[in-house]
Amino acid sequence: MRIGELATKAGVSTRALRYYEEQNLLASERSPGGQRHYPDSAVKHVHLIQEMYQAGLPSKSIAEILPYLLATGMVTPPLLERLAAERDRIDQQISALVATRDRLDAGIADAAANAAAGARCRLA
Image 1 (spheres, rainbow, N blue to C red):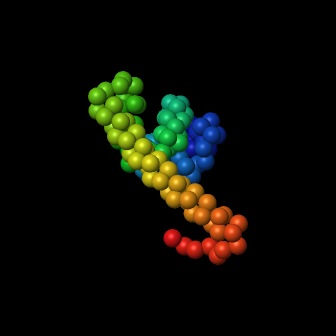
Image 2 (image 1 turned 90 degrees about the vertical axis):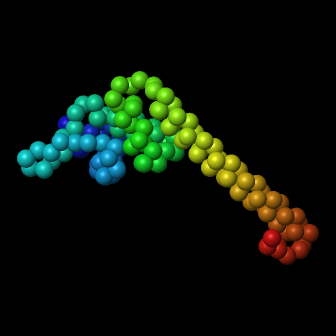
């Protein structure tokens, strides 16, 4: 199928598909005229890429994980290690975001208390 048809079936833009190719996440064959052609399995492939992006994985990590998932679909020890590493990375991001939110909450509470007392807001 051509790029527009894949984009429609997968629910993504043609620009996204070109980006996936640039990142070595998706491959196409070229016609003599240079048009991209994809197998029917590319729809499922694109959905898998989208799921990993939605989970917060960067392109580099997706490129490392995809071969395990597409080759056999079997869960291997290296795949489990890679997925656990990604989970740990995401946990660290979550912790950093929670700490930032807590600092903002404290600043908001301080500013609200100052405003209620008619005091000026001061920066910490």
